[in-house]
Amino acid sequence: MQADDLAATNDVIIDHLSSDIELIPEVARHLIVAGGKRLRPLICLAAADICGASGPRPLFLAGAVELIHAATLLHDDVVDDSALRRGLKTANIVFGNKESVLVGDFLFARAFALMVKTGSLDVLDILSRASCTIAEGEVLQLTTEADLDTSRSTYINVVTAKTAALFEAAARAGAMVAGASEEDADALGRYGLNFGIAYQMVDDTLDYEGQADNIGKSAGDDFREGKMTLPVIHAIARARDDEERAFWARTIGEREQTAGDFERAQGLIARDNLIDVCLGEARDYAARAAEALEGLRDTPLKRTLEDLALSSAARQA
Amino acid sequence: MQADDLAATNDVIIDHLSSDIELIPEVARHLIVAGGKRLRPLICLAAADICGASGPRPLFLAGAVELIHAATLLHDDVVDDSALRRGLKTANIVFGNKESVLVGDFLFARAFALMVKTGSLDVLDILSRASCTIAEGEVLQLTTEADLDTSRSTYINVVTAKTAALFEAAARAGAMVAGASEEDADALGRYGLNFGIAYQMVDDTLDYEGQADNIGKSAGDDFREGKMTLPVIHAIARARDDEERAFWARTIGEREQTAGDFERAQGLIARDNLIDVCLGEARDYAARAAEALEGLRDTPLKRTLEDLALSSAARQA
Image (cartoon, rainbow over all chains, first blue to last red; front, side, top):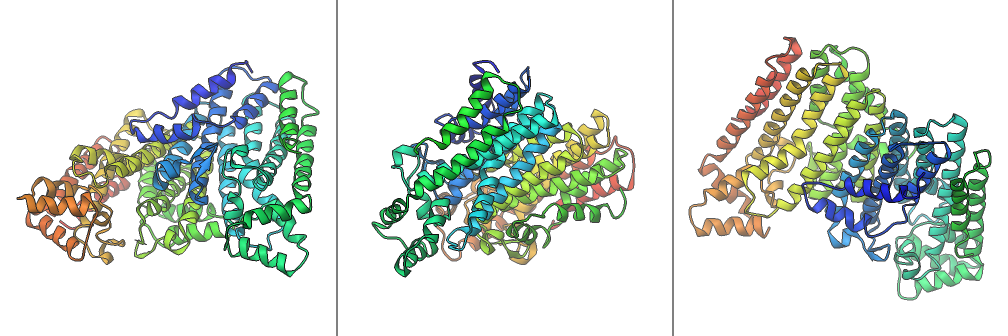
């Protein structure tokens, strides 16, 4: 991987937003050009590099992975009725829900057109399956919304499907385009999977800690939507009396919320140190991600991947 | 193509609706199992057969094409806020908009996973590009809604992208999996393209003639949504006075509609025989579709394709 491969991937992405229908690049650029850490392309490019890739195929793949991610964000914001992402108004607010659904579809299709350029059916197999899994995770999350009985294990299933599956696919497909051994591809897949779980756990946890500015989206979004994320699952399990249980049943179960409810939820979570508990769980997954890399050839980018995983889960602990 | 290939394609489709998340096959089956003419799979299978295909690859391809179609229908009904399709309540009404968006995403991803089974990057190239074009057509249609200045040529662009592109891709990809010559693949692509335009024109025209029962969706849907379809474009061009122009400006341009407006629109369209005019234009495209087949080897399925195109445009004339 060259130092400027991430910049080159960015160029690939921008190139593939083009369309005669002007509204399409306008909506897409609002989301993609304005922000994003390009974490999934980075994982993909690093995996390819560790496995000895050369040529432009990893760039096409990395671009495609980011386009799939962008498509899911556009649709998620419609489904969640979100108003803020990466510190900006969401596309559904600026352009409309219809526009976000259709431009999401466009980006998803463009991602597959871009993958064809890698010339690898393996890549298309991995990413099409991962895309199925993402949609399954989103639907599962929808069915657990407001369901106070949602277990930690169901939460892990949601997170694995909706977030970690694409991290896993990015890493594994990156290895594949480099012609990696099955063993190395599995190791990188395991890295992606565990890092993805850690990453989403941190995100869900900080939604109960941060200000809007901290995480670039509206803090309390998950609470407002009745999402059964890890801090809430723990908090409900540790409710001390009927009044507390009634609070969660009303705010999350019935989504009947009034001023001060989010602050009370934050207070209950803070009382039992649940931010630390959740970030600790995330660190366990991050550690597994780092361990998965052990058998791979030692390169600067391997250490980058290690650091990425470990630092993400440490970011507020 | 065997007599039971369409049934076998149906089995492939049903198989690929499966998911551990029960809501997914439930939503998908509501749309797919309940109805649909399987026109695109038929075109695909017939094209493959005319070009001498054998084996299961055309079935995978035909199934994938129908899944893409189903995904677009789920999203279209959300975007158009439709309540009725194929004589049944739409999935967005029965299950919700969020569910329709996410299950549409799932079906789209599953379609690409199924295409991988054909082992043909050409197929994935054709269908991923067609899927981009479909999304572009939907966005273009959205931008022309309520825009009284929309020209016939823009309308043709919308129809070509949102409908005919998938007909074309189904026919062309069917030829490709059969190892057809470029000439034959082009001919079948031309068939699909022209048939698709004719097919959508007929559909748009009958929305101003039929009852809900006739076409299995709510008659007048396009009118209510302010869609600039062919009958309206012609009617606006032939408005006889300012009062008529004001009628169209209010009902389509402003989407301010009251009881009796749809009947008045139907009356204006009938007065100038615009149903016949539009169906006549559709017949021209259908004739071009039939002509495209001329150089291909003469088989029963070639005649089936001819009949399909010619009869669809003749269905109410």
